[in-house]
Length: 279
Image (cartoon, rainbow, N blue to C red; front, top):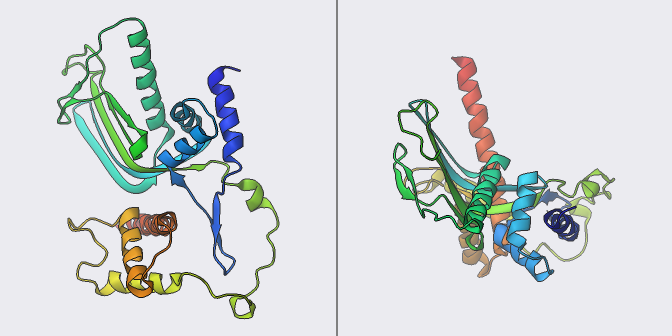
């Protein structure tokens, strides 16, 4: 086992001890994710050397999953393709592309080669741009792919650009051991004693529904696009501060924002499928 594999194994053992589920007083539980930078910093505190490399290796292997906002563009065979999403899954391919570019740069520097700082994606309009940016302290990265020394008119010529931000990671196992075990019986809320819930999530979510229906712009962003995870978190935070003069932790707010965006994307997909079947 090489050093990187050994480090990844140790990191996985450490991360299995982290809390990957949240629950509410009503007995509802759901998986959670953490910011990319937080995961890296926590592993650094645990003594993992170059934890950013370890996290990247786990993402490439599929032991960790990632989500975030992203934009993707590709030019090939005279056609241009593009896609963007908010709170969407960041595929293993994107992490492998990033890892390949980092490894290529290291090998080139080791051999004493002179590296160009920028890539030219003329068809996609990204000129100049960096081959990659791995800005893990800010939860973002980007890659720019273009075969070197290949004429634009060559049939094998292609350009591909990808940028992701607001990245969060979660384990592929998703605390499966806990999920597979028999859950303890849930006591109905009406029969449960003890202190009342700290945060009125029901009220916050009802406010969100009312805002979507009767707000000046609903929940849409200023440019008319759908809200992302951070937008929903801000709406919830504003309501809590207005009503309670305090708010839950940002991680809790963003988790509800993530669940909202996931449900929104699922509804949009079902609507698109219904339109296709009607057509």
